[in-house]
Length: 272
Image (cartoon, rainbow, N blue to C red; front, top):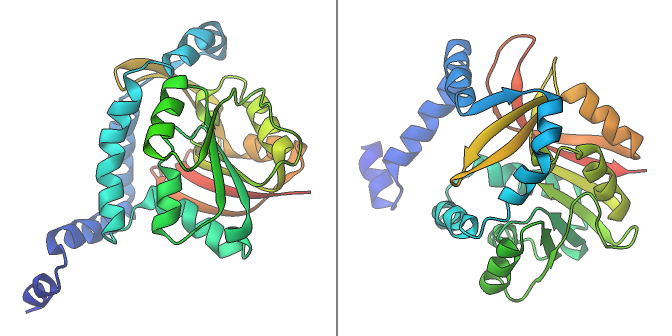
């Protein structure tokens, strides 16, 4: 009867069931350990010295002109589901943390660092957030794609470690899955804090609670990239050194159940 009612209301019952099963399993320690092993198979751990030696080459890999179309093919399916009311933990972690803590959100001037093709602007509109949003990215190809897809926003090619914007230019700065790919992540955090007037978000940040930073090589979109998984305590101290205090966080995903637990989080900081 419930299935028939759900189908009559146009609800994708099988998708709802998959979500419920995933939530139940996500709280199981053995399943978390299994997922962790599968997750880390895609990574090759390297030393900090090796990461520094290859950082310029790997940074330029993000500029590969084939990546924007590949990424948007994946994102477009997520956006379609999101428009149709299906939850997405990655998107929701950001929109929830903002709407929960920033009552003046719709009047904010927002910068996203590492905006890719600019799809966050669409996520905001889907959720009824109508801030003054602009984005920047290290890749000219991504900015070209963003200007084509979302011509009503401003898009700039920028280096996250050396932004050209003036101090305190934006009410809110969102570092969108960005610092984890930057060897000099301390500089990227400092720049995000510098151009923010009040709030900084570090979105989709991979952290260990008891070790790190750990440097990895991984393949994504057919190219090799650097990825850093941070020590959460060290990362919070680094934020604090730039005048940023964490006031809220959202867990997008987590794997281990012991002293070396690993999570992907979204942090909201306020600037002192």
